[in-house]
Image (tube, rainbow, N blue to C red; front, side):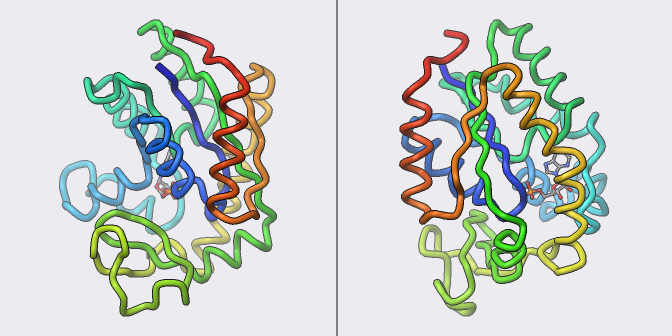
Length: 219
Ligand code: AMP
């Protein structure tokens, strides 16, 4: 059992790396942003509640987010361990997560922080296309706008919250809300920092080797 949190600004490659590492370590990838976008797409009760927050690049209220993610963590399919991507996003969520896991005799074993400079984040987000079905991102030019997703054949589209003004807002929210988590987890001696500007495969390799150097906290 191994539970890992991925931290990093929008555009740092969190989603891509979380998916790759989950596959390598046979863990369940839980991406809060993907779950919200799928709910908006379905137009269900949750989707209706969160749509406006996603459009503006603001955080969904903690109560809704914590309930959704904790539900996924305690589902039977998450038994091998999870990689949390996009959650926690602030200290209140981190504390709620610790408390809920402790109640189940579990813990967050490692926190991977993917560090990328701000100009590079803006550059990546302004040219990112994603598959509307499986959410895999593609930098413009790599897969071509009219082409289909190499993984599932889905249509590629721009994420509405990757528009310049929403990107500025999301980065502001990140530095105010999520960045303090880096110190929080460093203080608990869980943090592993990885330079995120290398190639996707190099970054995955760095993460896997950093994780293999430390034992999980809880068995
Ligand atoms: P992401 O795909 O992680 O960039 O998330 C997209 C959007 O979903 C964010 O801008 C928020 O509106 C919402 N969101 C995702 N994760 C969280 C979270 N942990 N807390 C609050 N809102 C979230």
